[in-house]
Amino acid sequence: MHKSRLAGFIIDCQTDDLPAAANFWGGALGMAVRQLPPEEAEKYVELVHPQAHLHIEVQRVSHPSRVHLDIETDDIEAEVCRLETLGARRVQQVNRWWVMEAPTGQRFCVVRAVSPRFAEEATTWE
Image 1 (cartoon, rainbow, N blue to C red):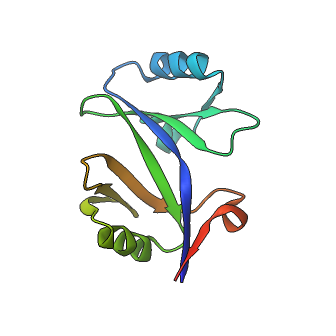
Image 2 (cartoon, rainbow, N blue to C red):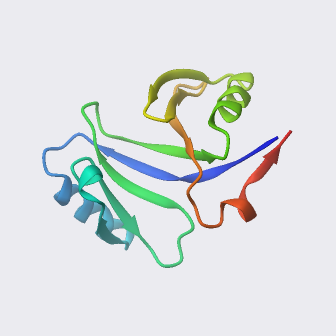
């Protein structure tokens, strides 16, 4: 048995100016821009809204710009297997998470749970 839920959205930007991209999306969404620790800051910037229950980041990427979602879970392998039974396929393992592809072609990630309200809001899967 494991749990999972929608963690949030990642705005993939093919850009050399991550701060400008983050400032645009923060302004567009009415969210504050928050720098991440140095080991993440070169590639990611977090967008924060006081009432938002979703994690939203702007990410520097080398592929064309797009938006993808993250599913967070307390058991990555169990969640990946559950999604494979629904028709998703594994694309690439990155550090501890998986990039997946839906049967309809959209890419998404399965990541470890970090949301403070994960235990209360996640769906339990048998």
